[in-house]
Image (cartoon, rainbow, N blue to C red; front, top):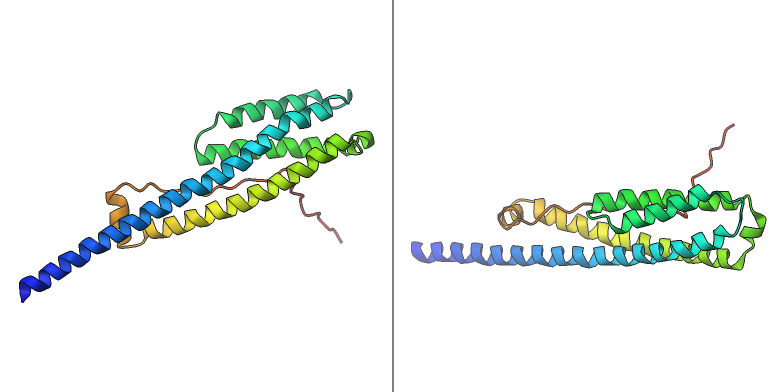
Length: 183
């Protein structure tokens, strides 16, 4: 009787271990899928930058340093590995793009340019898609982190080296700061 109980306990632990391992594998693959969604949107945004730079280049007074900065940041971001480093480089691109749109406000003929307006509209659409991809990714990171850090599933996660996942935080070029109201 004691041997049967021991076998049932061991069988239960083996089944639990297998199920926990499979859940961890599932969430690790969901993380990869979620990251690929972000990566696609970042690539779309990066592909839009040369067109934006070309649309703005025609305005002689437009600050060349701003355009060169955006181009350099785009090149740096494409070579970046790692979630934190990618977020940092993409945030720098967002700030540079924001500065292009801020400077463009001073050029009414640029703001009326159909090419520029189309590019801006596309950028807004891409940023919306990027925000949705980021939310999905971060939700998957949350679920994976809970599973891999809670006891007793953390024993399986640590034993099979399921690495910690990082959240992806990024600012968007189309975000506007909330205006301060002083009374």
